[in-house]
Length: 212
Image (cartoon, rainbow, N blue to C red; front, side, top):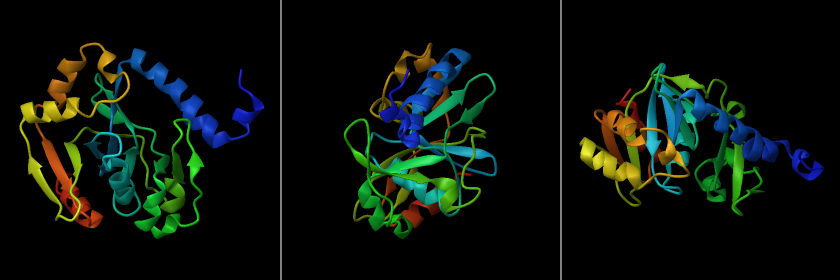
């Protein structure tokens, strides 16, 4: 049962209750949820991994508004049996200072989140039709690191380095998934990169595009 105060705000109800209920049902069906955003192009995805506040959502939004499709904002679901990545990409939640980067967000009001933060909720398909997709074939894993005042650069990294960075960026209960480390080791065995994302987001997107 939900109070009228919860139900009257459909956005709040969907994000904090309905989607979480869906997520609870996915793991028993063999989907492993991992902390990350994801972009797709031509049916293939790139998983962007960073600690909370590390810039992955901002970068994913920048990609979705112009040249890529968003697959996920905060959780990517790895379908281990069918080798597909899934997401719930329709709404992104950005910090209020994102208005400085994206003029189209000027009139979006910051909304109070359950954790006390205020964020802008953006429906991607209202920004650009066709900017979302719910599934894609697996591609590269990219660890995003802010590099203020620097030129964006992309470097390949080895599986050991990738695993170390991966473990520093986990969130929630993702490690509780059965055989979690074996699945992550397989995911990071090839095609792993570190992106130092500078002040020019377009330059970062140019680098990501080379991975598709």
